Amino acid sequence: MFEEKLDFYSPVNLKTYNLNQSMRYELNILERMDPFTRRHSENVANLCCRICEYLRCKRSFIVYCTISGYLHDIGKIFIPREILNKPSKLTDEEYEIMKTHTTIGYNMCMKDLSLRPYAAGALNHHEALNGTGYPNGITKKDIPYVAQIIRVADEYDAIVTKRQYTTHVNISETLRDLIKDTKPDPKFLALDQLAEKKKNGKVNGTILKQLFKVVIDDTLYEISGIMNYIEYLKGEIKRLETIKSYEEKAEKSNKQKTKDYYIEGMKLLLKTNDGETIENYKQVLLEYNKTLNIRNDRVNKLYKEISIIKKLRV
Image 1 (cartoon, rainbow, N blue to C red):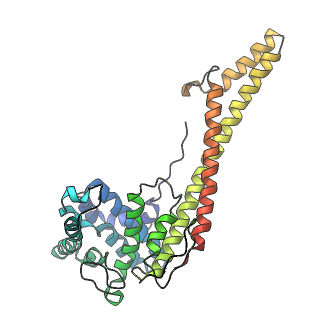
Image 2: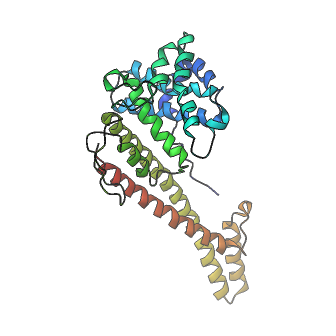
Image 3: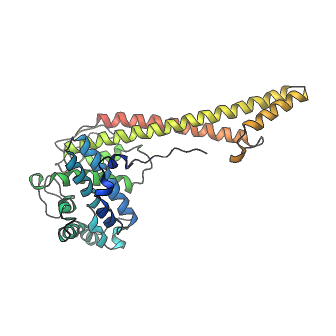
């Protein structure tokens, strides 16, 4: 049975910058990471690239920011696995150990001439504009722009991954958590949530606006994939309904020749390689109709999600 396949972090846009070659060394560094962190780093790099495109950054900076996004968590190579992969909330002591991945990553970059240009992203991607971040508690004027971009991409993907979303439905929950950290006094409509109270700024609102555009792009991409699948489902339903009509005509006919004609037509339309038979095709038809209803409902939710995201204010 055909199924829609969606890759929200397609490498296509990255390839336009010939990053496969320029990041060969850096990608080898990623191989030392655990699979979860490596995938997260790849996602952050992709998001950084697309955010930079919406920010209309220069090509050289986009490449630099993308590679920095890939390498922002390299310090986690030396964080104990029982802390890095702990499913429950970290203790205060464990959290302090986790936070050291920023300085560890910075030191790794500074000791390697090939990685040194990307040290700023590794060190500062958890710093906050209002000085409440770590490791140094610096404020906006001292936080490199690349780190401000990585912070937004990193936090977004971390929340999405943690909540194990398989689609972008209810992604405004994630955006709500991010928008709490924007300034000044952000108010927005996300599902039935009330307007947020005034918060001190932590992340760059201009950068966050571009993330919204990226999320909308991804949502439209998902809708496109689902619509392709819906067209497939409609074709299958039409085929199976034709089989059903042939069966009804065969049952109504008094002539054996006519019955055989329609039964033969049914057999020709059955996908026997997929296990369809005259005995079970009605059940298959029922399942296709259920799936179609589910997909149509999903598309409606996604369009609603886009409407919600567009109403969000930073």
